[in-house]
Amino acid sequence: MTVDTPAEPRSRKRRGRGDGTPPASKRNPNYRQLRNPFPVMSVFSDDEAANMHETALRMLEQLGMRVLLPEAIKIYSAAGARVEGDMVYIGREIVEAALASAPRSIHCQAGAPERDIVLELGALAFQPGAGAPHATDLRRGRRPGSARDFTEYTRISHHYDVFQMMSPSVEPQDVPTHLRHYFTLLTQAERTDKFPFLFARGTPQALDNFEMLRIARGLSEDEFKAGTHAYTIINTNSPRTLDIPMAQGLIDFARHGQLSIVTPFTLMGAMAPITVAGAITLSHAECLAAITLTQLVKPGAPVCYGTFTSNVDMKSGAPAFGTPTHFQASLAAGQMARMLGLPWRSAAGSASNVNDVQAANENQMGLWGCLLSGATVIIHSAGWLEGGLTVSYEKIVTDVEVLNMVAELCAGNKAGTDEIGFVNALSHVAPSGHFFATPQTMERYNTEFYEPVVHDYANFGTWTERGARDANTRATDVWESILARPEQMMTTPDRLDKLRAFIDKRTAEGGAPPES
Image (cartoon, rainbow, N blue to C red):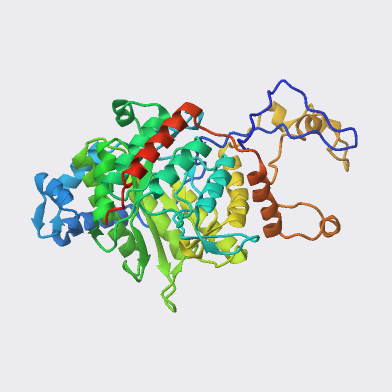
């Protein structure tokens, strides 16, 4: 389902054109609040997972975390952690108290109530590929990310309901870094009402972002802090390092009641042990340290467990995604998250350089690892190439096809009297007959099946007559048609005026450089 135009009332009949063309589709599926329908899988036994958790606690107690932000060190120390220079040794009782206060369910308030999502075990939310320095499409080729790319990617992502959360998509490198956060938040406020992403690049930028979002939502400071209105991604620097901007982001977002999704990015054989068990144990320890900091700042602060663990290609050292090891790492991370009871984030993605069969295989293998591990949030679920160096316009469309199909599966199916169809289908057809004209088929032919975004189900002859166009070429038509539609502002004009006035004022004052 798309959201550029309101759905037609169900009571209004749609008719064909009189030329044999079927009526327009009446399907109106809800992809906005999904529950994962798949039984979770495990890669380790319960005893093995418990031993990994115990080892992670031991790691924090005996090996410690390197923490580069003095304020964070003071917070850990005040809670009883042992500090030696920038090394912080966190006792298990501190971690256990933090885990007890971390929320198991987080109500995320979007720009419109119908866009709200709840993050908890069993829920499912998708985000498009994020954080890429480059963009690519068949029309313009590969290029450094720009403001235009960020804007277009936001519009495409908003168009598809299967993305319940926005992502940082592509880095707009033609916008100065001290002004970039103004542009990215204004673009989201203008063009989407989905749950937004905010960068954590130092306190000045975080406070700017919070103030801008309050203006866009019409909220007081107390109202803003009382709800979860935005999120950020916090990456530890593996192994066992929490740097200044990430530690500051955890503190700033916790203090203001906003969501941090903690995500160590660990590549087996490089910045993590070469084994799945070792890498996930390291990732788990880093997660525990970061989650603990949020709860020391503000008990009950919204926080998500997270991991992004795959392997490197041992011949080149390059990251690899969608591998069997990536799949197993997701399953292992799911075991650890379920042990804690916290909502958690995993990721798909692709290392392919173009949107080809390799890209599709890797993304789907990674996606199914996330789904079968029970991930709450799946980032990089569409559009990601080159291990995150590029987002592809065509790939976001071709990947959406798979996400939509997964969303259809989330709705399940029924086997009632009408569905079994003894009266309205089975009894109407003699042996060797067909069901095209049965009452059941006639009632449902326009609503029963998923309708593809970019797949072509025509036979070879028809496909050839239409130009023998492959999926990438068809995907180009799809994203171009989305961007050709009239834009619809998603925040009221008065609030946008106030938001732009705030940005103009802060820009004149010099903006806010990112902190490092």
